[in-house]
Length: 275
Length: 231
Image (tube, rainbow over all chains, first blue to last red; front, side, top):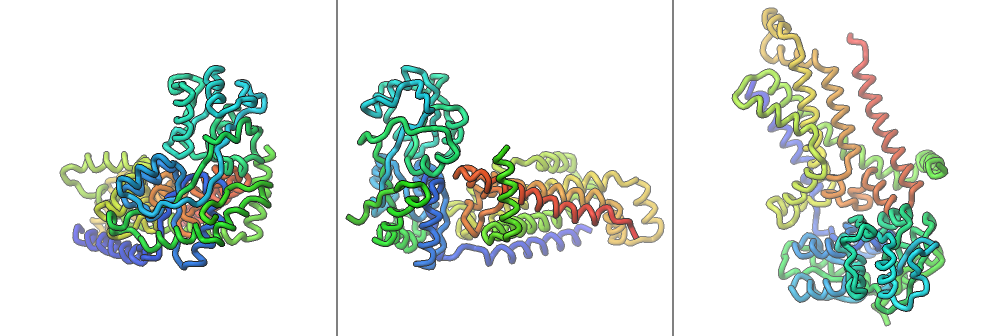
């Protein structure tokens, strides 16, 4: 009986291998690690099909925070990054994980909160002052807390405001993407820092308002980074270059500028690669 | 409440209008979870039967392992498989990460202990004397095995349904090893999470409803087979 079962088990293993092997990825796959804001705002739904159509590559998009995207890059698990965490990106390049960092587009961060604005953020002159007031009023603040570009920006604002909110009960961490965090913020009527694109894309479901915007410090810049092929020979360097070229090409830049205008009544991303 | 109603209406439109993307996602879900269930059924029924009928040292330990495996957390499975198959991992050269094949492997690992465990307990619940009786009637070992499996087929089908239900509704492993890549590894559960993140609640609800209908349809078919009057 042992023999019979062994044979059957072997057969199953062979069958599984046969079924699995043709599905193994070819050189045509490009892995893009990017931030949740590009997915949650719907921008990728426009860009990905255009890229695949133009080049014949299959783009596998993994939408995580900028921090996690770069962590994937540091292991050579992604081919190309589209991220928005400038200080971390510079370190990433310096350490030799990535090459050819180029600017793609920008939008800005906004402070979103309940219309009643309990902390009085509306009349602030700067983002730092707004954060100071939230800390002072101990108003509920919901943080991404996920190493994303948005979270890094939030931490730098707390630091500049001289506040250490982690201990306060008014400061809550979700560990989720921007879209899901905004849903929590809406439910609990707290404050948060959001990129404008995700906020605009989700505004229809929310009873929240932009309470502060326009400070220079809130600029949110997206860069494309190719992973260093010399360091990680297994990556698809050619595909990565093709995607980076695609992003900064004039046609794509036009597409980025037009994105969302009809649907949300305002431009979500401002192309920067073609001046 | 409007939202649920919206979701229901949207689901109706998506299904009746055969929205190509939703149809593709549904078919992919069925393909991946179906393949995983078939493979798990093969492994599970054989190993469950062997563990139930054969006495060997360390058997109690194996049974405890199988019983623990029935509650294997999908995210843990997803994490381990990801580490195994990513480019720098030991199986990295296969290029399996973010492919449907990786999802099938993960789901197979989740479903196999469930089917093994239920088969095991079904075989053990067969009356002890049945085995002796069959042998006394002059059956060969293979005939004995087939007859015993036939006797235990009802709970085995329950095991298959539980296995399928476990993997089709699972998200942790699917999103980690599949990556929710559009048109390639995006299944109903991962699409539901993504649409929720995008704030498309009506679409998310309708995907959820389609998932429920799919699970019901598969289980209804299996139940029909199970409850059929024996010839």
